Image (cartoon, rainbow, N blue to C red; front, side):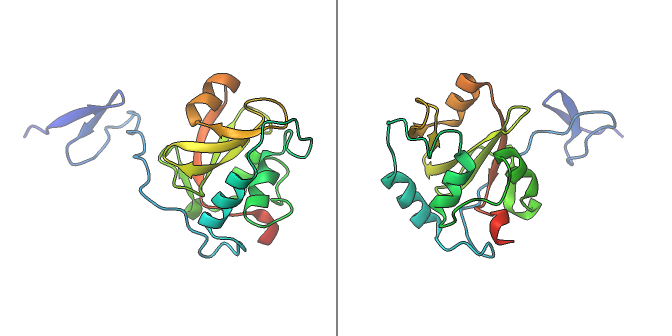
Length: 170
């Protein structure tokens, strides 16, 4: 009996979805999940956090924003800090049930995470593939950007997005 197959990311995958031994699995599909603070203990909703972030956009060199991406996201959700030492550490502490590794369709309020072999980076989605991030358009600034710009300008590796879960309240 002959098994039909297809190629997926260089791997042979049987049409039943079985990956042949030694072959790389197909990449994860983008998540269709929306942003939710359910079960996170956050004091603000995703919509409230996005509104906070939009109200704080600036191009000036504000020392409170310089190199503090994780803290800024915590502020958006009503905390004084995230409870994590760095953005990358924050990503590693988030329960798997709240993470969407590799997914680039990030709902408004979702937090995007990057790795650079060090502290990493995180930013908040405002929807439609747009984000608010510190420092990308000047030290201490807080401006609109995209995943692609962070990757190309800073050479960051995109990890995925997560629901707004913060170590500080867990």
